[in-house]
Picture: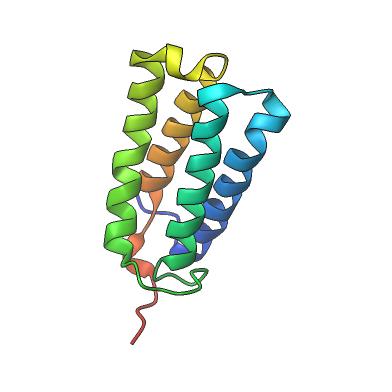
Length: 118
């Protein structure tokens, strides 16, 4: 059931950037966990700004690729946090929850509803 159109998906993407960027400060992450959160915020921001969707700004990344990246990132975050908890000491639950949320948004998003440029 695809209940999230690309406009709502874009809002959720920008909210995700804010969550990843704020997590180290608000939740007290340090070391690798903080670096990973900031890196994910940057990558997610770039993907969102560059995606061909209503809230994308440059629109050079097709939504098909955007969807593929999210389909891979969600499970990877979950697996990494569970299989290598020493990498994200003190933040394991955050990365598992983030991965689950990304998977849920991927599953519920109607990527075909994107406006096509050109």
